[in-house]
Image 1 (cartoon, rainbow, N blue to C red):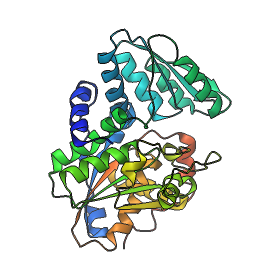
Image 2: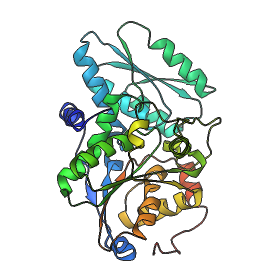
Image 3: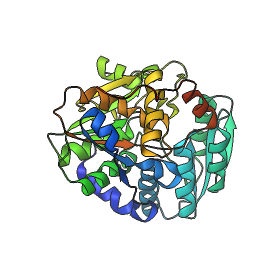
Length: 328
């Protein structure tokens, strides 16, 4: 398991490669929910998501340990692909991304714009097999999306940066869960710096492998590709490195597709920024927490990314949810 010291080390090594993201708040939302809610906007991070932190943490450390490293490979159709391509390019390394052919044209173009070669396959298992074979080539590094201590440590710097700015007067921290890297790092930082603060996760009801894993006490894998607006959380399973940290959470909420769409609309409306459904999903956990939390408690919400396709956006707005106020 990773420690707070690991996350401080990761913060040092990724500092040249990331930018400081702002913390926003909405007076309207605070008044409606009778709480003080702060949003760490990683949707405004380089490549549009927090994933660059874990990729930088892993690759920078690996390159320091192996100066002959030349090539980076990864299997991803989303934010991880762009993060890996960007960091590899910054470090003057070549990269190849192996993706399902359902990758959105926008994300494919972004990945290639950062210098990566993109190879697509008919299924995720085919892409996984191809990247595994490629990783065995000399001077080649395979960068996992979440299931490695160095990746988790990098993702934990999101919460570290936010707490450094806001201070330790925080009652609860909220983050989405896909593979669990961001949420695991958040757990380590929050409980390490603010032992009494709650750490609460959220994931789609249609992709609730993490919740089922926590309920059963062992890692549960999805048997088919989940159908969810929150594509960043549609991972088939959490990992052996994230599971122990997820067991230490203070709460976990699975979120329906209707509520994912609801909060995506409302956060985009209130904060005036591009928020992807996976990010907005955490607000349902905040909403449930706010019902019983003392008034004017302080909540930190990690908005993990802002990369959303036009197709997903159209699906989000099939029904107008802004007519229903987010009040308790």
